[in-house]
Length: 552
Image 1 (cartoon, rainbow, N blue to C red):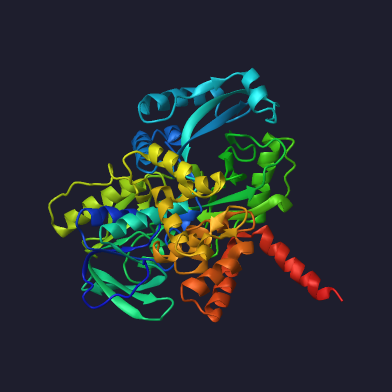
Image 2: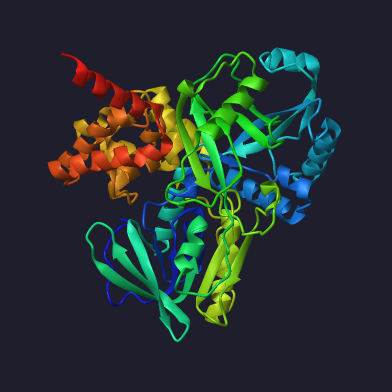
């Protein structure tokens, strides 16, 4: 389990603050190289910025515009490694890039950029980009606006539909190497001794128990919250300058495309997406300067209107309104603070490992980083940790190592065999493979122990009760939100799991030791957690309850 007590013998080589994708990747890499590691996060794994991304594994095409060739090469390499090491989670994802008159980036310039990208990605992609004829556009994307349309290109990138599961698998692999991950545990302060940082003090959010974790090196990998961790304890310039990115999720609409459309917004020339995702569509994202409360990041009405308006412009038949939004997702990108930037797109998307020595030896802060390059970031961080520890370099193992869900000699053969032998429907079996990879077998093993655990708890997805058990017993879920939003992913459906929440809580009562009071508290907490998504189902439910009260 990821949530457990620590003791006085818990001196470690490395304490990592933050269990987002970067913190987990650091824990995995460092533990694989023989370091004793503890990770602490006040919430669940991947519950912050990692779960609010665009769910795309970018090869780095857009970084060519800023001549950041180093980041492009790194992104291409890491995308390639994810194709190989996580084939159940990361897939080839074609994108159509239409060229319109008046765009700030002419079609010729984009074609040149694509050609350069193809050269850099030789042998590390799923196909070269190509021009799309007017006839093909009319046939395959008939609803695309033709007003000012000058042509298009089809480009191959990658998608990770379930970024949350990428975090969970990093957790599992880190634990295999001996790392301990303490979720729902808040770092209250750094342990400092004469300026040196010697670990962290932490509070178990559920039990109220306080503990000290003494570490030779502490890595601050708290994403947008890195400055909050340092505030009042370590003198430092401002490090985080993250921008706000919001997305909206809608059902298929008139003219909805079968592939991702990557186009330039008319309002601000920002490249944005409309892309298919698990039977629905994601529109995003914005890129706004944000100076507000990092714990209260919600998509604004203006952002939602912007994304809907741009989608309606590019697909004139869509007719989307705010009432069509199932829910929205907003987060803060962990970007380096850059004073005086007028265009947020110019802020580097790379990462830096910042040492606070000599004033505060023993402390490193991770600045920046992105979903695609989490493994490379972790390799860089661990290299620096070993240097600080005064230890000889040790070979990084994560370039060749598959994630737990891909731990098989032949992924395709496993998938074909699972589909043939699974007692479930084809759709259920495919879903288990897409979410759990080879660990889908474990779901069936748990379901076979009790007929009640083989029952479907969420009709739309076909999710089984056994998945709730596995989420807690095998994958470190603590709360109902952990189970629904970041393990089973039931909570990312159109009603955000509200229809299945009570059934899942009941499973926890019957099989996981929850009592009735715990179940009621978890249901209330889950509803509160969903408010930042502005889900239509929650609003509709509240309106229905209000109407029922008024009915004589």
